[in-house]
View (spheres, rainbow, N blue to C red):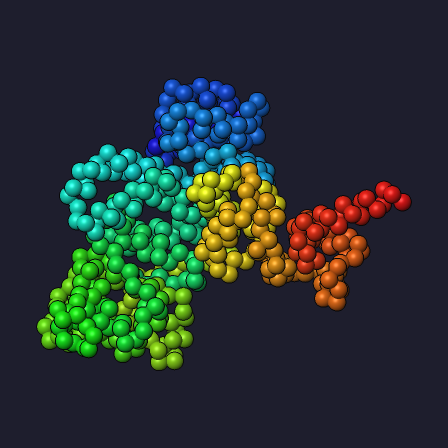
Length: 486
């Protein structure tokens, strides 16, 4: 990979260049942003690695200048700084940086970022190839594959690869890497576990489609959405005359539609117990019988299942077969909840708010520092789905150049509880909370105590007092006005 390295510190620049070269990269070094920009104009680089704090132009200014150049959208810029500052990181991402690190640089973290950049660049190249070959590929594809390919093309064009789906943290990159490994072996069944809204369906599609975007069918069925009386015929299909009200010619089931590809069983924990043995036979023997049929039908499908239930508890209750459980979890992936990967929250929030703003013709293009802190303070019990729905609501109800605290009133009500779960609540705040239960309007003393406890953080103070941030600003302005008149 061709890398442009920018750092005014000679020792750091030389040591990083040596390490990157040992990993097989072609490295060009520059001592400042101005000379780096001149080199960038005449050469092509897949990645730019730069310090933020430098004499003259900063690394963030370099990102902005690079993004203005024609064709530079292909280069991924990673910034690093000795100042572990959330606002600085947000500024880097807002300027268009792909990622950021703090000094001293952890070489394992750097290596992981290099791998992600290489994957992202590979996806961009693949997207170009698919775009050029689109008409040719569509002409050769089946009607089902044409629809899927068109959807993937649109997704790649809008989001520039899997990174922009919301994979910004190391835990999720591990999940994605594991999913890609499972993609290589279609005979391996996979069980995906995780809370509601974490993105288990996205992981299932990564396992199925892989890096090359497989043309094989991907058929999903929600086991919780079908009554037990219809589940068997929906899954296996039925023969003519199998039951009253059925088609006179019979019907194929989801297993037939998924032949050669993947059958995704979402909420597998809800599948009726009496049908679990039949599903196990499909996995082990690659065969099944239609409802009312006597003919054994051979099939070639991959089973991917997902659940948000505790299957161990379901087995104890006799609601899930142990043999099916152990057969499904030959390949196992656990998707961590959003609260356990806070690195994903702000970048994904920016992704969602800008996407919805574009859809609705709104201005949103960034996130304020206070809003970012509030997003990070919330526990997100509904995970990625809750985050996405919250920001879609914001895009409907508000319009501004950047997301601000007042736009997030929908989650402010939960912030007090969130703050207590994130860190121990001091005695003074507990007293303030007790007073708040007895009266709707906190006193000036309550506000002063809350601000002292939170070291002046108004967002946390408002949450602890149980009032909105706008109400807190109003009370502070009211108090200032009253003091000046006395």
